[in-house]
Amino acid sequence: MLGRFSRRHFAKLAGFSALGLTTSAASQDSQPSHAAGQQASGHFPDGFVWGTATSAYQVEGAVNEDGRGRSIWDTFSHTPGKIADHSNADRANDHYHRYKEDVGLIKQLGAKAYRFSIAWPRVFPEGTGPANPKGLDFYDRLLDELLADGIEPFATLYHWDLPQSLQDKQGGWQSSDTSKAFADYAGYVAKRLSDRVRSIFTVNETGRFVNFGYGWGIDAPGLKLPTAALNQVRHNVALGHGLAVQAIRAEGRAGTRIGPAENIAACLPAVDTPGNVRAAEIATRELNAGFLNVILEGQYTPGFLDYAGKDAPKFTAAELKIISSPIDFVGLNIYAPQFYVVASDHAPGFEVLPFPASFPHMNSDWLRIGPETAYWVPRLAAKVWPINTIYISENGTSADDKVASDGNIYDLDRIMYLRNYLTQLQRATSEGVPVRGYFLWSLMDNFEWIYGFEKRFGLYRVDFDTLSRTPKLSASFYRNVIANNAVDI
Ligand code: BG6
Image (cartoon, rainbow, N blue to C red; front, top):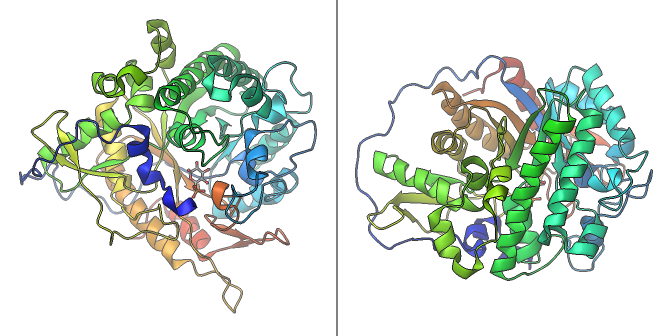
């Protein structure tokens, strides 16, 4: 079942891929679009932020401790048939109790930043109403530990673990009451933690959880809503993001930095020509119209609204203003190339090429290998939107990560992937693309949603029986990158 749904289908199923696509011939222009030879020696800019990432439900465990409420992922993972290996994250990595050891793992890498998420149901067990007095205690401890080790915390407020009662009461993100509840939660967290957390990601991967969770029934809450309702869900998430930005500004310390972490629809020129690059810019804007573009431009594109027709989200001008509240950075989660495009004479000016069956992928079959994604996506984003700070809020890969007879884990495929993506990212920074940091997914193997513990993305291998953590060879690779502030090309 799982194999039928890969995130490369997201745009198609979300109703965007047919947007003006034509069958016209690929553009044949042949001028290079940028000067060659600008790539420096493999070094990243001074002050580049190197980090790793995890999320609450995937690592914390302790789902019944200290007054935590239930989340939609507790319900979903306990529903038979939803998780490939029939597991759940009740214990996961037990990070809730082992956070000191885990902060030590970050330190051993030499990483200076850590992206983690806060579990909304720990803070407001029912989503709204009285805060749990113990709800932020764990994060207080975690923050203190990180700061004592000189590691800068980047907190994500919503990494998919919606309080179950909001789903039960009001259909979760189907209601704009959830957008408002999210803002209240965001303001509360900012008030309590922004003395130590200076950078906050609002929502992780709207492009995934809306479609997978509310459209196709693959992720929690497992709904298959019709297109109009799905578009409304996405709009409510965008509204929640905007309201949260305002609440954090109102309640948090001055200077708290805010932005989304989005799995941007990754559009790349199939062949690097000026015409195709322009086509990729158009595609970047149109294929991200439902979330990133409305946040950054304050309007739904005419193409998006035309295509959606009667299924377009209902919105007001006042909501668009809230949604596009000024932000400080954009986080881009970058894994696979999704749309290789060429120029087209027909509106809207680009054509998406089909992937050949032989296109290579990593251990996860959705994770096609396209290192140049790490170059084009930030470059095009910075061209299309007024962004002056980009973080790669996630990048990484699964691998089979078997323990060799000598006890080591020789994850050479992960190293190959990282080396190539980082080389392309460095190419972007050397051309002045404003990428300021990189968070490798993931610090350690964890509960990979519908795949359970079958897919391993960590720099550290976790034995889910003993919960011991062991560095893989890629941990040495990344340590070396961080130490040199350069990729070893
Ligand atoms: C991103 C998520 O989608 O990619 C992470 O933000 C996730 O939470 C990672 O773990 C890998 O995805 P998957 O679906 O293979 O577990």
